[in-house]
Image (tube, rainbow, N blue to C red):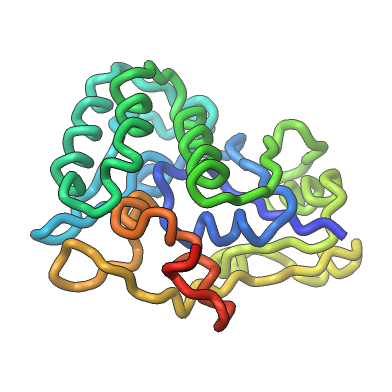
Length: 238
């Protein structure tokens, strides 16, 4: 039995992204697809005392490129993003716990490709901060011919997938009967029910970057992503 999830790499994604990673045995980054403008690939939201703020990486306006081909034209945005993160979260309870990690990311490292930055952040946060044991892989390492639905299905077959864990948005294009015919069960991820946690804003904002959760609750973060589903798990014991 092998549970698999397949998603494009996003910039500092929200907690639901890491919930799916935690659900599976292998998580496949699917970045050899068309880059989409105004999506989660190069931006995400953070919480400020005055509401939500976008952290957006400038990547140009070229519409004819894959995610893996998105190159940074300069690194000026890195210092800007670090400063914005500090301004938003320097008073958060666990800011100091993760400050050096993000300082090295933004001030100590020069990044060329968007997907490399995204993947590094995701894997480090998942493994080092959330304790996730899932294996990561690249879609280019598997046989995946065809387009859209067919390409994804062939990718999963090549990965020896028996259970595919997918976000609900994929219901718009996935043909479930085709998966059933090759012995792959589809599990639709349910993102509802996440408990609230302390935030610096006036009203709770659930759909924000994972860094908001980390800075506010620190090592208890796994409880607010998946641990709460176990009624016997206490947030303060994680």
